[in-house]
Length: 306
Image 1 (cartoon, rainbow, N blue to C red):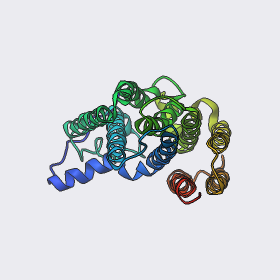
Image 2: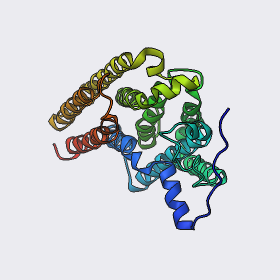
Image 3: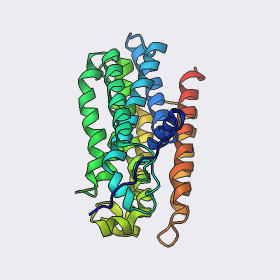
């Protein structure tokens, strides 16, 4: 039985906007967007090689709108359905909905509006993105419910974020041809996200177990969770190597792969079963560096080398 939520405090329109931005953690955009942009660059090269138009400024703008809409809708829905669980967890009780800093109505308006923005952008990008958009929504909304009945929620989150580079590829090329490269990139993102989400969820191991919630740490223990996280991140490196080889990329992309590998090794070195004090650094700082480094190196490889 969950406790009643706090009464929503009145606030100015500007303060409400700030709280809505905090609700959906705009700063966490750094995880998914760089890989989507890198996929768009790879898709541009592929489209030109097959006689297509490639990436235009208008199409890039629509990709950004689609990504923003989908991510905002997913985060908003997650906060709405988890608001009572968050209210009982000391780590998350201060979030906007359980703390009464935002009304449930405001959160729903943001979520529905973001969903409509995503669908509008998908429609503008062409028939294939529009046809695939309901499936994307099913995945990104479904993730929020998985921890209630399955420890595989981390894997579903990985798939949800992996849809971004896949969607960017389809948006640029207009179809599902020549999809080997984006599939490898999607696998890399999926393993990467699932791996660091397992590490992040270690913070809630005791709470989740006590409330009957499911996660890899609850199912396999802290040590087992760290082993599975390391295996997932090994999968990330292997999949990015496959992208490198299949797409015929050069030394800049190779440098990005080396930097990512080194960062993941360091991430696992600072989070140990007997020392979980640096989880926040492993989650946000290091993984933010990974995505930005990949975008930078992929861009240099695609556009600066002959």
